[in-house]
Length: 273
Image (cartoon, helix red, strand yellow):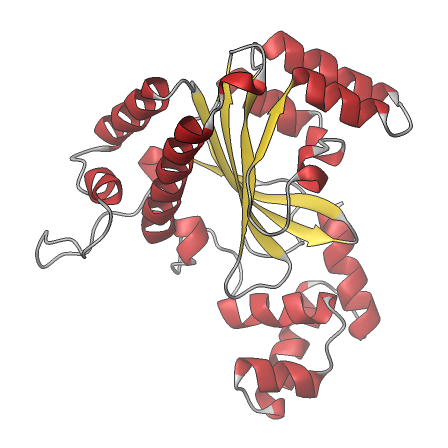
């Protein structure tokens, strides 16, 4: 998913990844970790590789997903479940803890990593108005056994309001153990997983018939609409004629049962709330 228009994130796992294209097994020139992941003979082997590399540098879980930014809110669009903490993943989305997870705001927009631990999260929560939802988030996070980690985001090269969020998590009680050498290895692994999933994920590649749910042109148009762009600006950025943009706008209004531009944007935002 690529829009702020889903009520819940798309969850996917190793068994949902696309197979490599036919016609040879030669891989493009990439860092060795990426090639190791792409050339794994099965999802189970790739999962073992990732978990072994996580444990080798002191982490136990890796969360990977996309979020849509709207009015300082981070709305989840997709999440890859195979390397995460199963119980915490379910709890996180069932309880909508992303609404009060301060890491989304604390992580620098420059893609620099945020080093965090439970005490750091508690301080962030206590710095704003305390609510039962925020207190429950902290209590459940402590109960999960996750204590520290690295959290960072990557801007989408094509969608101004979308980010990929990657979180490496550990049961170690504080963040002091995450020294520069550990952080470097963590980022190498995280970016390798990102490259692998970007090539094989039906959710991220938008392959037809895989649940992406909407033509990519319409996804881009709705993204620009949410940003407040005019039809002329949208046509310019997407290199389309204004007639083509108008056609897709009619399709989007029909999809969201909207009579005009304002209703269309509001309907898409409401669907994500």
